[in-house]
Image (cartoon, rainbow, N blue to C red; front, side, top):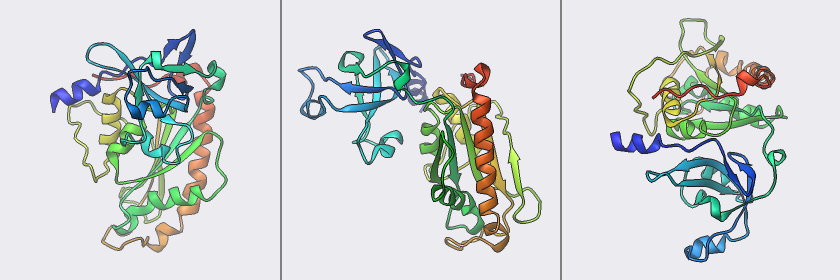
Length: 273
């Protein structure tokens, strides 16, 4: 596994310059595959795509990971699933604009996490669903990650300036009590993440090791009353806090977006190797 993590750590620069235009995560580009490309690449000739990341292989060559702009399954590409995420060299990319075409700074990811088959542990998922049905805050992206820890670690490699985790966590308080935490990540080499599990601290440490962690991290947690097997059923005191938690998340997102406007906050947290 050591070789795998070494290769994954070989992330490229934040952006590359193509035809005099800086291109990086969020840039819209047109695909121009070379004549010797395979048939599938040639089918995508002329399609508009969005750059997800700049990667660098073992030989030092740069590759841009992109998702198609009009792909209804683009979120699968952002989760690094095959068939929705493609790689092109800078020579096969045509920039569509200057920095003005890139997303405005201050995007914040709201990650609903938890296991819906364990009673109150599904609190974060329920809050994410609640937020998805409301008018959002500009710059806020809400995703129900459930127990997909690896997908969340990869999602954090995008150009988010902040992330808000929503989860159930026992802290010895009255059931339904909401708490906002600013996690501090300990140093260490244990980067294991269960494919079907979710430990926020391990996810954050893996994201940091992969190359990028948003500078602003908050955790909104709710004290559970029960985490026994009871599919899709929250206890009454916890369910009663879903709406309040959604409002708290929106407030945090707005604060984080405002804070990200300062130069220091917009820089990603330093990578620890």
